Length: 497
Image 1 (cartoon, helix red, strand yellow):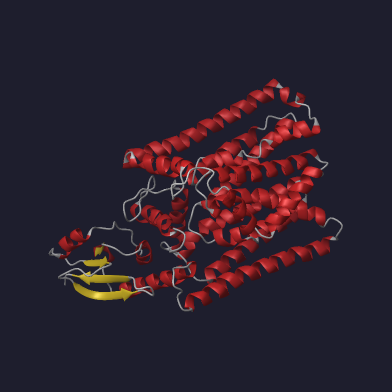
Image 2 (cartoon, helix red, strand yellow):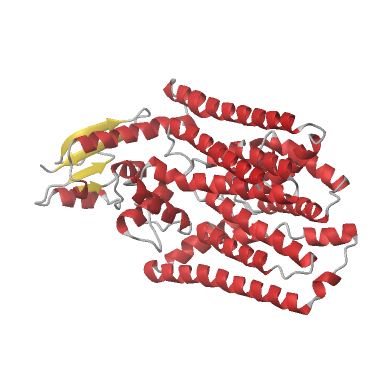
């Protein structure tokens, strides 16, 4: 128990260092569509819109509200929507997932399997990126991992003749949180490992007599029925409440455009199975070098599964979870590397199992040195990318076309512009936005609708003094500030006095 506690503290420290490195590096708020989720959080924090949120264009939030809720809650502790409050929930998602991987691997596969699994998850490009990304994916990954753990524990309990009610309720409960964070598909992803139950019976000739007790089966069915009612009631209740506030456009956005739309068409209009190979390339390249270890380990597990039934079950559960998910995401036409994050805990557990087997002849001291080497190499790579390469690229001559590094420059420009506007002592309650990026509102600490230029002219023609931010000068207004970005983007601050 002491060893597991020490390992847990070590994982938390490691994630804390990973997070600190990202915070010390440049901010790319304007990259990867991070501005809209932050605006949803500001809608909660500033306007109390807890049920359903909108961005500055009035468009409905594309995801359910757990991430905006958490950002709003942390913002009350930091005195406003800050960089820390925006990314603390995502860091919690990565840290929590790492702990789930550690504890499940430690208790079922052995201590070193759990340690190596957690290290491979934390020291990966996915963790380095997601720990500091204002999106729902890290929290979604955490809830999927917890739900999948519940599914595995429920299955194992049934194999031993117990009801498995606790695991079943955990599966549905955390699956509900995953649905309220991003998508009801979280419950599907969490259940992808369950075909291992049939794999085990066929491969090992296991009897089902232990599962035949009627009392245990009734408790098991009651737990699943309760979980199903919870899942449908919470998600359905929230969706109906949101529809009552914003009308049918909530269903059009969340179900029509996001859930069903992405399942049948990509953003470019491609049908399913077009670009199916991208999912496999994303996994192989973004999870290097661990993806190679996971594939080699999978082959080794199939050839020589663990002798312990519970460990053997987790091995097969993770293989089904990982490769079932890769097949599922290959079918969907909406291809994005970040979508694979809920599969990485399964891959990490396979990696941990494999590394533990490869190093079982080594002493504990040598294994500690190897673990320290993994951490040192991983953190050095992260620091090299985010503290050296990206800042250096951002200060070099801009290339012909936009790049990710440009987002660093653009984010800094807009943050400096917001500070300049604040230094003028302008009443932010009288700011009118007729243009400008959402990041400008975020840095100014406001969340207001974007108005048409005609309405901005009407406001300027009124008796009350107002300040208008737009991307072009407005006739008759006094220009207080003209900002020109590195690529020629212009933003004007104008007033009628």
